Image 1 (cartoon, rainbow, N blue to C red):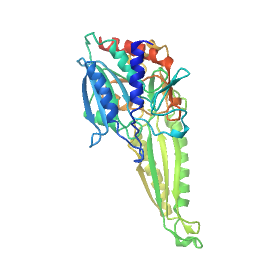
Image 2: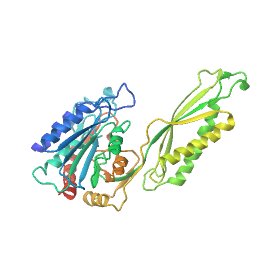
Image 3: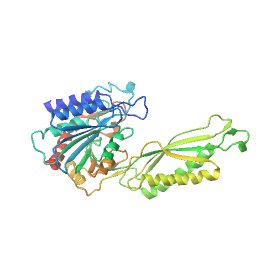
Image 4: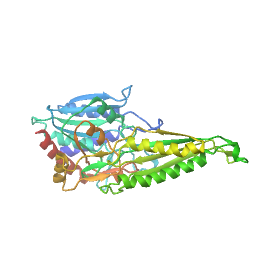
Length: 383
């Protein structure tokens, strides 16, 4: 095994072994600072200027902006350093210990997406002795798997800036130029509890919720007609009724019920406008029934993402990979980098089908092709 590959495996071993779970559940949530410090040390040794941007007040969650070279253009290679929680008992090996077997590298985050960083570093190392005419920036973020607060912090600060950005999420090295957004909403219906033997003694929130659900399902059909996009495998926006809670006893009229749903918009629609329409429609359902209805966001929205098909970065990615750019249903940090004015694609090693489940792995045969591909992008944008 070449020295460069041994270095890739050792770096990935350290990254996988450094826990950095992010979760909306505080029992699981951790910081990512130890991962950021590892990356910052490696990149500083390579001559990169490293800046750590704190995302949480205590500094336990942070972003890293590591740059070499200067100028108004250049290239960003970006990824998130956090992982989802894991079911240790369902893994065949230690999720926090990198295991190699059957041509695969097993470990939590090996494909989503700690594995991208050693490959990006290896690609950058090929240019260590060359002067860069435009900057090469390696970007590592916090909390992509939960709040996306790392990417939000970068967008608010207006940095980094470059001509192009590649987010190394697992796409099997196929360029992605479009994905849906995501919003998660709560609908709370409040009625009046009473004895179940006499319906006039109360006003059922559950019966009101039945009407609310009917309205949401009707609106879902309209969304598909208005904002359908055949570039996606699932062409229409999706609205999923995730969970519902209400009432406290069979012999009491339900006084309150709450529904949680998620909505994934295509780039053809606007999250805020769609949410406002949902609010108006549900208020119109609840008011005649004498019920109170509150719609609130469970998370900050992630906007849909689209990079035009005729942009330089998309054309170059299609040329270098031999694959036409695609659209995916999962959300990434791409929309936030687009806000910073960079042409952006999502493209990295490994498959999204392996992410967020036991025995996550990165295929070894993706390692060198990824390094080679990133080197071509660096040469184009930085030399």
